Image 1 (tube, rainbow, N blue to C red):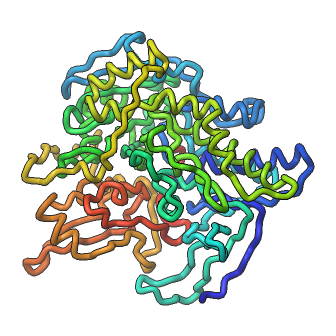
Image 2 (cartoon, rainbow, N blue to C red):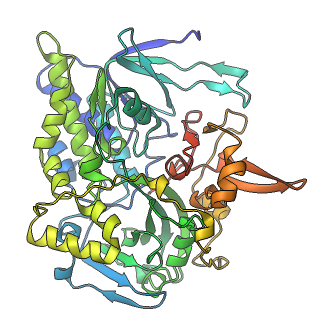
Image 3 (cartoon, rainbow, N blue to C red):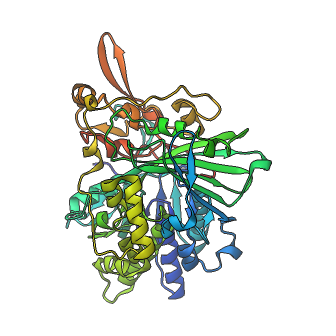
Length: 549
């Protein structure tokens, strides 16, 4: 047994995203208001708060206003209010039709919303948390769950620092710490690896539809001042995905002459030859997008999986010893394509439930009231109203699914008396390679489209090379012996960072994992058809370092 330093807190929070930071702030607000002494620790695997945060992002400020009513006076980084809101149907690589406002589901209207950098908002929230007394530890990964003798979660163990690739200790080795807590909140973001373990151990998703995912790929561009249109929001549907996959694109004009552009590809696609990365490179050549990037310079790149199953996939969120919240549980509202305000609200509700449990006489150990509180809040109402948004799109496709959702959301406010569920996991949707033809992807032109390695470079991704691989294969033979003949090994294409390759050596195919390239998007953990790849956290501070993303 490793001799570990032990630190004890009332509450440990895993993950410095909007959910975890909102929980931290709310707990301390409650503690100060009622003059209670409560210790809160938040650990974040990124090198700093915000380093691993990636989102579009158009944000509904509803939850922020609840958490900090005077956020504008406090200097929260919401500077660009939406003033142009467009949705275009792309029918081909050159043609598009802008949909009239009345044709767009009202949940996609962005009146009163802001275009922001979510990473910068999280940095600001961390400042507020620290000023309230939260201990924030960036650069520390939550590697393992800690259980007590009753099998209840009693905290987490941070990752060991200084292990070599073969598992031996290097000079300067430091074992991870045991952070014990009365309650632990897991807010790791989409497909958190500890969240996965909690789901399995406590059967939190029993009886629920499987979670469904999209892969969001995003770039940040500097544009000439003459082309900058702060407050402009453009969403697109249709081309280049068409019948190949669900999803859609976006382009937002920020302040400071910057534009963000991205594509979301639903991960239930069937064609194993499809490459979400290359679809995104193709997307930027459409005139609607290209005209906004003329004479511009690409400055950052990133990708992240998105949990979009919604109401039907929402698990039980409490377990003995804590809660799982935000995108770790899947609280994103798919009808709005927004998850920040919902993640924040889940964190605030978690804080209130835990504060109540900590201060009860005698203190409570049961957090089941959290699930009830969530379902009775505006967050629960939003998710219930949006319950059919994703399964209908999966069943009917983008066009007819969109038509159903327009009727459901605009006329009935999500109240049509039907509930659809998609019970097929995304990985199980992939079909054999011999049923499909590989899409044509042109060579990048270096102006609008780029290769994967130059993109990874712009994500500022870095991992210590001599460390255990954080992309673990349950069976090392499956990629070559099974996935390659059946699916032409799709990991080469679904990964947006060039992590996985099939290389030929001495007339032998070898599955190569370039783990240093990994930008922590979690797509491999989701889409591998054999469910053979498990993403675990690497050494603390490893991974991307996103500025202004």
